[in-house]
Amino acid sequence: MTTMSTTPVEDAMRLKIAEALKPSTLEIHNDSAMHAHHKAMEGSISKETHFRLVITSEAFMSKVQPARHRMVYTLLREELEREGGIHALQLKTRTPEEEERQLAREKAEQGQPNADTGNR
Image (tube, rainbow, N blue to C red; front, side):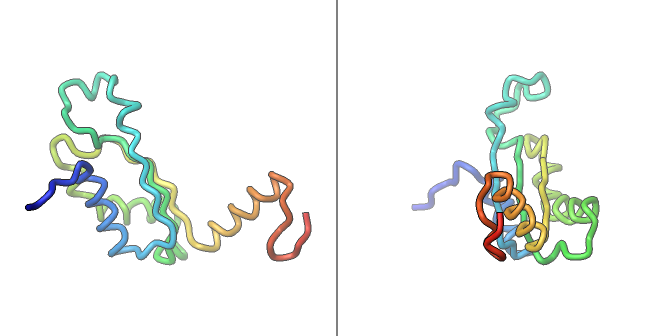
C-alpha cells in the first residue's frame, strides 16, 4: 500500500535542495495558511503555496545573494511554474561561515560568551 504525502511540494523541495546543494542547514517553513485569505489565493486548493527557506551550503561560497537565489529558483523551477504550485518563496541563503558569524552575533546580543574566545 502506497501512502500519498500530505506535503508533496515541500517533500520535492527538500529532496532537490538536499541532493543539489548538500546543505548543513535546511529549514523549510510552510507559511501558506497565513496567506490563504489573500485574493490571489481564491480558488486555490493547494496548501503549499508560500514558503520560507533557510539554506546553509558550501555551494554558496563566493556567490552573491542574487546568484544564490537563482540557484534555488532553478532547482525549484517545476514547483514554481506548476499550476497551484509555489506562489511565494522567501529565501535566506548563506555559507557555513556566514551562519557561524550570525550565530555568534545572536549570542553576543543575548549576552552569552563567545564560544571561540570566552569573551562577552
